[in-house]
Length: 223
Picture (cartoon, rainbow, N blue to C red):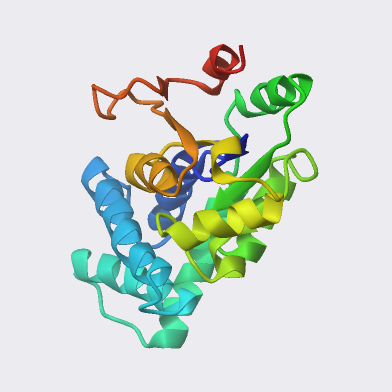
């Protein structure tokens, strides 16, 4: 059983929202729901550009900061200034890193069933390993396969092919669990894997049968 990391085992959205609020208050003011939503829209837009190989990791971060400064009607900065603001945001974001409270139990459940585990994530290699260390899951799940190490990101079939190669398994032998329906479910199935949608907020496609609201619900998939 292979897991996505961000917003599946690791609470990225909660950590990012808390970090954004702390960071924004330090130089601008309170993080309104509208500004927080805009920050996540900038994340999705520019991270996708990096995922697709259109910009560097540093550039997508600069574009996120620049987009926010424009929304705040604040002066735009040169690259070193944007990098400095990103570093301040990242410090606030990292200080709030947490795993979901069902993550450890899910990994114990899978291990007790005699199944191997792994992670396939679109995040950068060093960052994802740092997250696992901070939230106490290093060595508890693996191998950790990243888009950066593969040179291809979900939902591209090559990312899933790289995962299968890393595990030494055929696609049909792998059950993939993730929160992003298009990347983690549609993409995995198109590559021949089985997939379960982790829909923590109940916002996924209503007709999806392989959907769970919590990792605790994986028990029914192991029977």
